[in-house]
Amino acid sequence: MPIVLVRLDDRLIHGQVTVKWARKVNPDQIIVVNDKVAQDPIAKMTLPLAAPTGVKVSILRVNEAISEYNSNKWDKEKVFIIVKTPFDALGLVKGGVKFEWLDVGQLGYEEGRKRVTRTVSLNDNEAKALKEIADMGIKLIYQQLPEDKSVNFLEIIEKHFNL
Image 1 (tube, rainbow, N blue to C red):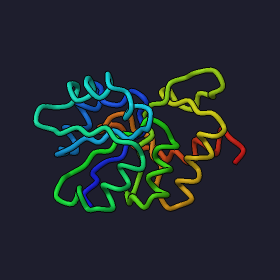
Image 2 (cartoon, rainbow, N blue to C red):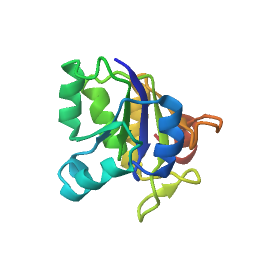
Image 3 (cartoon, rainbow, N blue to C red):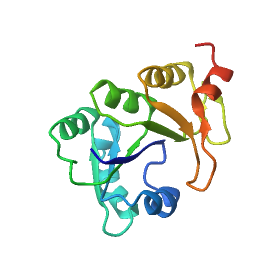
Image 4 (cartoon, rainbow, N blue to C red):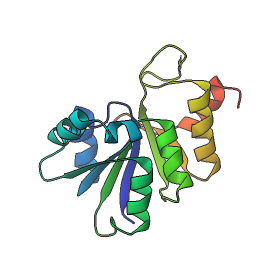
């Protein structure tokens, strides 16, 4: 299964993804995985417009992404998955979607969240979900751009949360 990148980014498809990450991993398809976004007709219409030319975009619910993965639908494509929340990523892992690492790129600050990096803020439940992903063998990294050094994100979580 050629999943070339799984990135947690609440901005979904945007300039950094389009210009930097897509250029780096050269996907055939970007798959946005989030139940709410998959039900939003405006997002389904506008997100593909932000993707690089020639890259197919799918916007799926978590269970739809798991079904597509398990049916080997992505076997012949290089797939870049973007999840909006840690719970989306956890759902994929629990559903059997295999990938080596999760790039925790962006989760904006909102009330109830604690800022843990310049671009990532988490609440207790989000930190627990990420820890659970790590406990299932997925490496968590923090890497804003491909040219940046990757940092072990589990260490960041453990520094800020009592898990």
